[in-house]
Length: 195
Image (cartoon, rainbow, N blue to C red; front, side, top):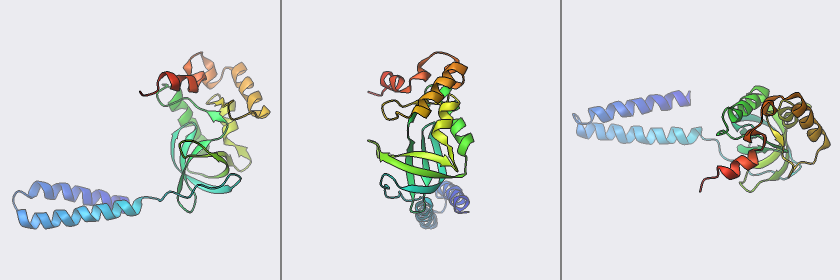
């Protein structure tokens, strides 16, 4: 409802700007009022950032936005958190079509469902690093099983994850269906880093 009101106010503001040449003083008052209303409504729609939880914290959260196969924003009561899925590294958006495929699969797995988050750490970008679960279902492990991400060896020495990756490679699923940079997102990022 608030978003619809914000859109309506924006359209009215544009209309008034076009008419302002004819009715200068009245239009200015209306435009100022509408501008203030747009900013107030926009501000009220923003969810505040939640404080970063300590490692070991378990939370139940709702998915707000999925950026790629290993990064998403969730709402957890006190506000929103940007989360990096622990133990996996997914192809980047620029790695077409692999990045989109990975993001879409993560969206298929969790969509708009409530998920459980087990906080592991905080990364250098300020994101919460966490294991994600739907009930007992480990979402990161599912991404590995289906070849939508690789084991992030630098941070994950889980035998279960490594064995799942070997199976995915042998079955040639997802990123393992053909050779390429999608099989090592970290190397791809180094080559394509913005300078």
